[in-house]
Length: 254
Length: 233
Image (cartoon, rainbow over all chains, first blue to last red; front, side, top):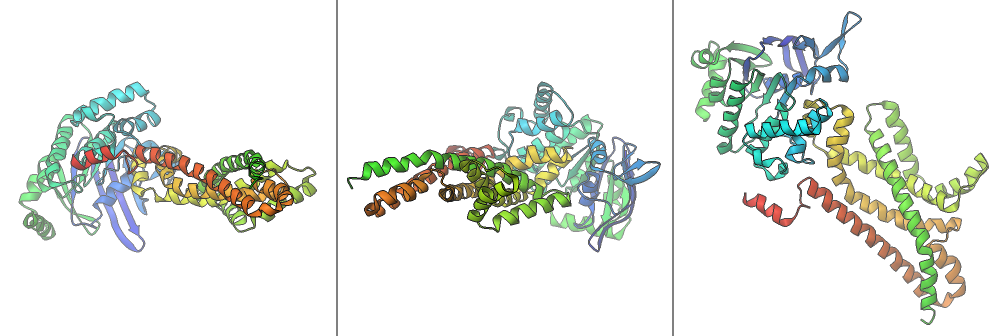
């Protein structure tokens, strides 16, 4: 579903990702863990085209995201091409990023109508279904500023799902939430993971969630994958000393 | 003081022209502010350059000279003269549009990057991101500085007296001062009062718009009760 081939990303003269190769199967749930600054979030941002790539290629569902084929050669993708590929990808952000100039209804229907060409009625019906799913059926005409952080993040999840993505990117979606709201959002994500076949890439510091949600966990350090394994294996018998260190630091913290 | 009714009547005679020049100038200012302001943010280098030249040219030269240029020099170049009131509106709009362009640019840039990223993640095109997400939020930031700008425009409309538009200042200086010279304190005080009252009207309208726009974003402008509920909930 997703293929990273020799991907490199630099910010100025700092190399964030170097020669990164990995692929994700359709329907797979992959969690990226690692110390902050290890490049996890950058991977999600590259997939969403929020950052440009310095070397290598990324493809999603068989088409290049960062490049396009033109006259038999690979050239950097233009805005239109990457938007086309990106339509299959949804993203949920740490800070929710709901649009404050729209109600919950607007947040959920604006992109489906403007981008996917759904009618207002179809988009609204879909919005109601999704609000039901995230447990906020009564908030359709509420303003985002009147929702709690947990509720806003549920709406943001619904907003991403409204585009019917085949890939969903979760960027530390519970990090900005009050502790008592975290469990609810994670339960919702587990539910979505079970009931859909969406491919999910997830950056999180919630190791309990990573353990029972993911098919595979990838440990990052210094812009490289230093270890990857199913969670049962990686959390109980990490091979790399760096992974062990990272996990025990997390455990002693919380 | 026995001349008061006549002085007031003559000054009020000038109010329609002042109001028309101000409203026309405001409409042109808004259009130019958005066109030039968005051009300043364009990825196209030449578009940014054209807009920058416009802004610096009209911001950096005298408004009165601009007026004379359009009213007296342009006819020499193109062979016809603009109606004075219209020439005035054009200069007021061009001049204040140059200031307004910076207001629009600043407000658009003040919208958090995360909002643009969220819109990008939903596959909005660049134009849709601007139109649906960024501008509606930026407009709220623009209203207070635009209030200032519109009041300045109102006061600048007095320069139209130089090309003999029958607006408030022209009435006072050309008609009243020669005929009621002894009432000069009264005449000029009343002129100030008229501008002040018109400025207060502009402020009242802009404040209302601010409240409506802020309410739409669920901000401070929303009713106190709604905010209190959020605080409790």
